[in-house]
Image (tube, rainbow, N blue to C red; front, side):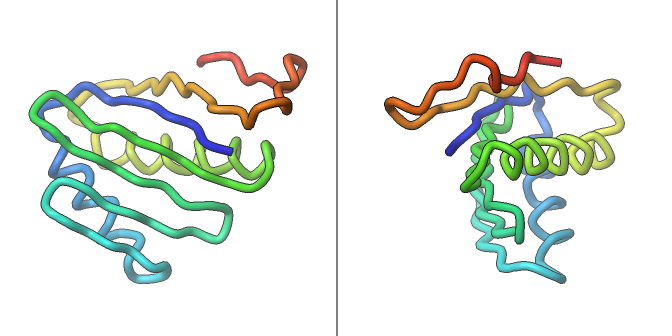
Length: 109
């Protein structure tokens, strides 16, 4: 199951690099110039930076794990991007065909 969010910022590469270096001490990280893949125990996520912002894709096996991963990503990004003010990521989930459960859809914060 996947979830997507975007942070509009002109510091996307900086935040992506900080997140990659932060997690690389404990987990596998592939850090490039404009993209980064981070494999945590709860799931993995990909960051793609461009001039206008940072795209984030989170992937996990179960909805509970995906929710936890979204929260972990958001809290770490908020710490690194404190100069941006309060950050709110609106996650959009990509449900596998035939498995949409409206009762478990997480509203945007």
